[in-house]
Length: 230
Image (spheres, helix red, strand yellow):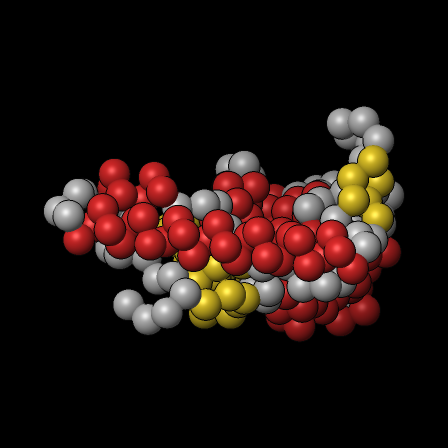
């Protein structure tokens, strides 16, 4: 293992995709056996989105590889609408890579649960956050390594580690479920505003870019209809 390192970014790579607007249209039209022009197909996608006929959007799949701190994955996996395989600290020694928010990350929380407002931190607060997180992360990893070196099982030694350590996982999800995820975890304000934590929104933004490129007509209808998943 190398030295303790710190990151303030996320990795989101599209590994493979069986996804297209044509697949949505094909699934929808099988019920009537009809065919349409490209313009009619675009209108059909918008109709399906607007009136929330969701099942045609399930006949596709995106597989993403994601690297993010563990606390992001714990939020991610509240969405029981995808298949997840995450690296296991029971079976492998985790790399000493930790998330530290950059200086632009809002640090001050005001308000009540469900209605928090976040504001900029002072220079002193930014410095304090960075210093304390780096110190705690480094010390925690030293304790983790010490336990491992003393023969303690990985599944026990990992209890030393904070939730800002990076993990990795594969996520496979269909477009309907992806739109549900994006509607809740993006900072974009649709018909129903969402207020996600900044770090999971960073992941959602990258996933949304891949989605918009692979299924542009579906994505356009998603935006046009207020970012509401069908």
